[in-house]
Image 1 (cartoon, rainbow, N blue to C red):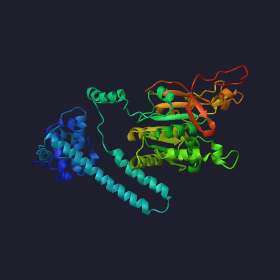
Image 2 (cartoon, rainbow, N blue to C red; image 1 turned 120 degrees about the vertical axis):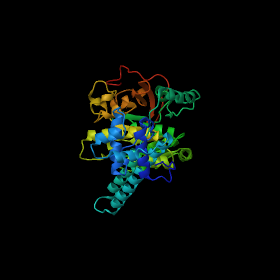
Image 3 (cartoon, rainbow, N blue to C red; image 1 turned 60 degrees about the horizontal axis):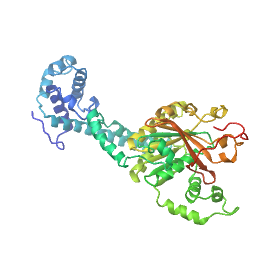
Length: 449
């Protein structure tokens, strides 16, 4: 029986039979299949059984044919049935099409099943709607995750392809995301990169939200940014954006009727500057990691996305509240790393530090101060730790009032080290520090760095 090569007219059952026949006659076609197949993708029970045994033998490095398969199956399938399948003599190109068709039809059936599951969820009225929506999104997400992908690359082919990346770097066209803070960019060999999970840790009131928004607004001049604020409302975020972009005091923005009032000229300048920014914010509270992933995918699809900021990790809800908090955080950081790679974006996630940092003689944070889970350090490509000495020791002199130290404590593809920053507190923003950092004097009591 000859095999038909037309992908659009060939049925799934015929494709399954043709592929099995081809494998029985040409074992080398197994390694050439670009689309790896699984037994459950076959619709006919007989073909599923035969394919399972063929796959077992070939993956064990054993030659397979009608005799070895019939013997292994012990009478479940007869020689006559296997001989009938072996009449198919497809070409290698046809084998590729058959494998693709089988996988495609399997995913179509999975889509139909997911549609039925979503319809049932829509009709169900016992549970909250948001829980049912989350389950529906998970059902659709499984279709994407189940799709096979061939991501093996040889050393030579990979290096040839990577030479284009090197040329782009040499020409200043690499896909690197500048933070807008020159010294931080220098420490990170240019800035943030797509696929990276960056964690910014600090104790409360050190300015991690201000630093993350400074970076986000700077980045949004060039690429779209999504800012997920699980703590502040849209009004709070907008107050800060007015102060940062207009270079006005936050206190004047909140209470414009007090003191010298609000410089409306600068406010208008800030609003005009916002026109040029690709900055998108959400203040939806209580998000879990699945909802974060869904929102990021939606923003990428509708407006584009280069950087996602999550403020902050400790406020992310777990998918299963019954699980220990440590496990929930591991789930979140792992998913954020996968999201960064999958969407080819940088993810900046804020995290609290343990109280122990305040109890040590040396208040500068270290990696082990990351709160609740070692998975944060493990999953992150870059870990930034922020400290303002004046915040932990108010007795320091005025020269320390706007000084901040940002430590690159981990850099998977770069260098660790410290970066000096200036914190413009009244405008809740950071900028590069110019000149040497302040030094401790005799009049300074207590700890500084």
